[in-house]
Length: 355
Image 1 (tube, helix red, strand yellow):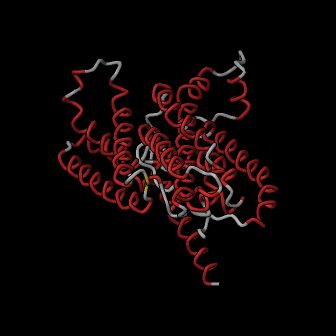
Image 2 (cartoon, one colour):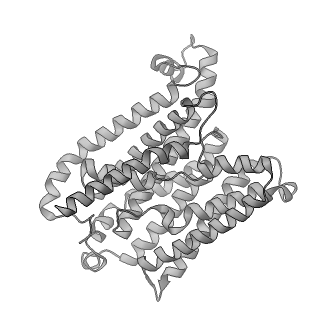
Image 3 (cartoon, rainbow, N blue to C red):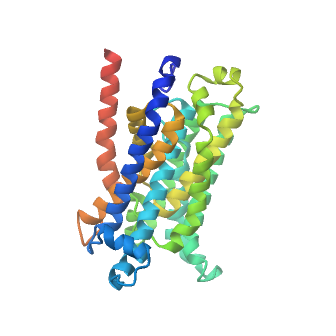
């Protein structure tokens, strides 16, 4: 039985804890959001935020401009990206019945990154073919399509005779990731100095380009798949017991696999298309949720979305403040937090297993 299995005797206590755990995650998300929109070079107090939202007449125009044009879109983007990566990671761990699974395993992030790097380095040759109004969409669209193509390739390689092998998908994902890394390395090698600087921030993850024009196209790409993934909690609970057991419980195992893989690809591809590659959110956040509230996916999926959003908001705030007025890529902050937490979780699991 996998680590995500749910003993029957533990079912009732987990249900009792679920509402309180969701409240805790919700409070953390709200606090992180308020801090993200309030702190920076210009301090915006909660009272000022309320006045701006309520359209009060005595609001400082400077604060209103900073809040609506800079802070709010960036905070919304951080929330959407963090929530999408968090719920995608929880879904992948449930699908693979492996707490070490991550959306990057199926090549979504690598495929999106390769397509985006190709646009940054080679896109100048095709810019004359599209209108100026379409050019801001080129990078997000390319990275989104690249993630979908990589996922489709991994899924096709892992499917034989109508049955999908999780182990084969993992191996195919490793191969696709390596191939995409080679392509990124070659494009980086031939890039000029200006392109290299843009590549550095994109491959390390950044929310610096946040604007309503960037966010609005990304919202449906992330939010709709995330909402659909929330509906898979019963199937994922059943699959934690094993595919054969899930089939006996009436779960259409192959159909669930296909839906989750496609939805994760959409969700992560949409997030990567606007933020670049940000690691550890989909890996660490589901662990933290399970430690707090238990393994039931009715809690893990929404909890991972809320905690992922809160964590991304906090990481972006640190990235903005730690080297102000310069800005550190948020992926560096996320890795600096996520790696020690993940190692701590692994050490705790190893100790528990030894005992």
